[in-house]
Image (cartoon, rainbow, N blue to C red; front, side, top):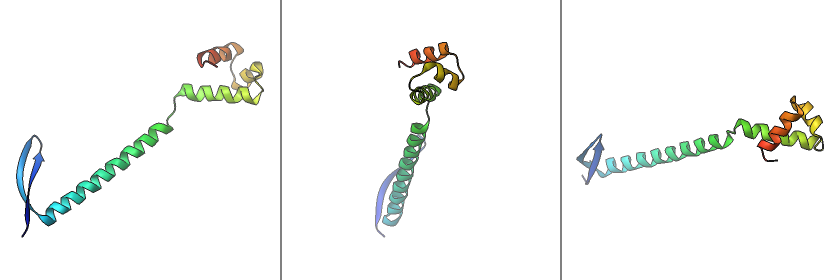
Length: 97
């Protein structure tokens, strides 16, 4: 039986173990599977984070689209958005538009 020495970390202790080549390869494959799963989870989390937008971003987009739809008529845009003209002007200033 071919054996390979290995160090296994358990908690804060490191222990020495002797593994057969088959056991060692099985552990390596399991580690590779876990690393691939971790990478997949990281990618999913990054995608989720990218799809989350702030309320300010949504609000800004609504103002931009509404203004574009009414050819920049601010009175009409305010009516459509259900806010006063003053509130619309405040949003335009806040968003630097």
